[in-house]
Figure 1 (spheres, rainbow, N blue to C red):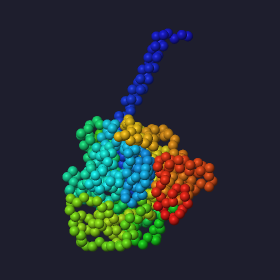
Figure 2: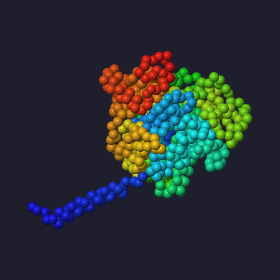
Figure 3: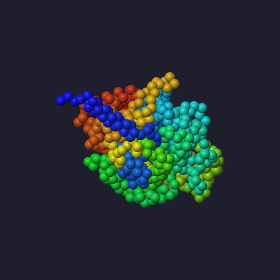
Figure 4: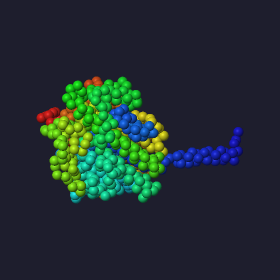
Length: 585
């Protein structure tokens, strides 16, 4: 039967109207360009925060996780400078010039190891600033070798890398009560004479609080000065990098929590991780490092972990204040908050075994330093009021006149259930939480996202969500293409593009391809191979039984290493050569 022409026209019109209605509905449902806040913690293990299995009080991070996504297989690069480089540029760190560290003690080679951001990379700040975002950075920078307060060349300082405003420390560590090379913009300042910020009356200056306060200030003032304009805020806390320094009221919360030693805490975390669904119950727990019954001074050893926990507790309090500031300004709904960590727990023994174990005297023994002095020492010799800064076993960590790390055994607890630590590219060194919270853009609440991701993905995600154009050239210099992929599909429960991920740091090297991981420790270390789906704790090396897969992945890693300026490397022996004198570098 023929359908009259007018009926066909009506049906077509109705279908078109329905399609337009759906399109309009979807357009209305899509949020405008979001604010983006990246929250980065320093030297923190996979299992430390509450929503990833830890006993440390992190209710604000836990709330973000409950209202968003937790990634179970997200990765950093295993060390401070390279992780910050990859996060900011979307490149592997060697491509951007920081294949190792930025300090004078780091080896320097052309291309991948120049200890400074090179001219072939741009930061998220640069790309989003060009896209119309307000851009702000607070906290630890650590991606330039030019760290002198009066440095003539500051082209890699935040204001010259795309950020409108900056408050923080250019170098990598220092006292929490008197930070080294504290800056506002390009100018080095003393925290005790900063006209723009002082802590509340009766409270000491504490860097974690100052980072939180300045982040909140930048958000409020952006809302006042640029209403309706989106912003990007990079908040790089130094908690819980050594020295273990915290406020007394926070330390008191954890008194006695760690008195039973390493294994009970580690076992409890392992069980919580399984219960939370973060790890497969069939995986073996990697070996415990350290024997509590052989620790001579248990009170001193437990105190290190108490202070570490207090530092993270304080960081979480400040994250809560940042979230509340967004809520107060009616910005929280359309703000993507991303929390992650720059490497695993740190096994470095800073201050734990000095040549001299000095004792604190009953009075200050050194001349007072002027409040106007610019602190440039990573490890100050004294406090401003004349107390010598001490380390070793005769002082308990925590106060401003102490400078100690929490040690390898507690770092092993932080990295539960994985092997190894900061510096290394077994899972303990590179596995990080990633919490993604965006009420207007992520409908999945309290879910786990099991797809692997990497710091290089943050640039691609920001470019995607901001509708920004990633440049091919800047000032006549070719810019390397982004290495990462946008996480937006994962936010929506969709698959990410298939790709391999790569690592190298100090001759430690790895590759992740699907469920398989290739990894080696030290420049002359042999390659190991693991099925991560079945054995993410890397307890069962399959390199012998999967020799063909091993050879194929080694070839892929070598091709990446040559393309991304990893090889030749500055370590001894050179890649592919047998161990010579046995030095790591």
